[in-house]
Length: 258
Image 1 (cartoon, rainbow, N blue to C red):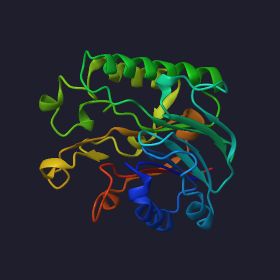
Image 2 (cartoon, helix red, strand yellow):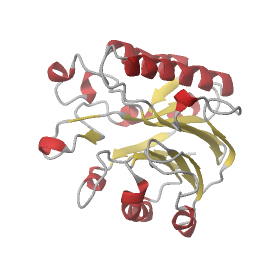
Image 3 (cartoon, one colour):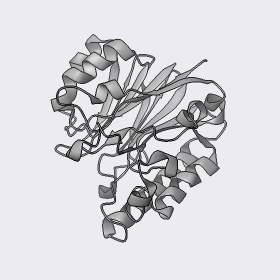
């Protein structure tokens, strides 16, 4: 089973690139973030033509998450519960069962600046995510929580820790929230295959950051132990960050021998 995650930074703009990537990378499940679309505008047919069922949760210009699966798509839930989504969730969370695995696509708030109300909301959102996962799943279940976490888990995941420290994405409180998910029972699947540093999934569009390798690893695939034990391959596809009109994120994929 191959599961991938990709913040596409506008599916309307990036759809041809996503279709091309699906054709050659061939994931069984693809989680998308920042579709920036409403549910009514979501391009279901191109995904169906490639053999994928799709669930989407979005309201328009901002945010938006999706799950595309060719191994089944059941029990789709938007937000933190079956109840109506609270405004603070902002179309950032979507869950579904794909081939017997519970898959959760997340787009964590950016946080903007440490100490701001947006930063406080980001920490609260991450806490709500942990409580949601604990309430709906168990560490012994097959669970994948993946997406754009807007957190670089440790200094290996930042191009220059000295320059990055003091800002969002690398603060102790943000990293502690990700660690709390790991303490509950999730494992960073990419790290099982790549313990080395300086492997990034996001680069700012400005100042030639991609070409100068000034990035962060903020896109994560976190899995429970039954899946962690079966990880066989992991890759951040830098080639998908190249070329015409790329997203500022590269897709991340993980293979499991089930």
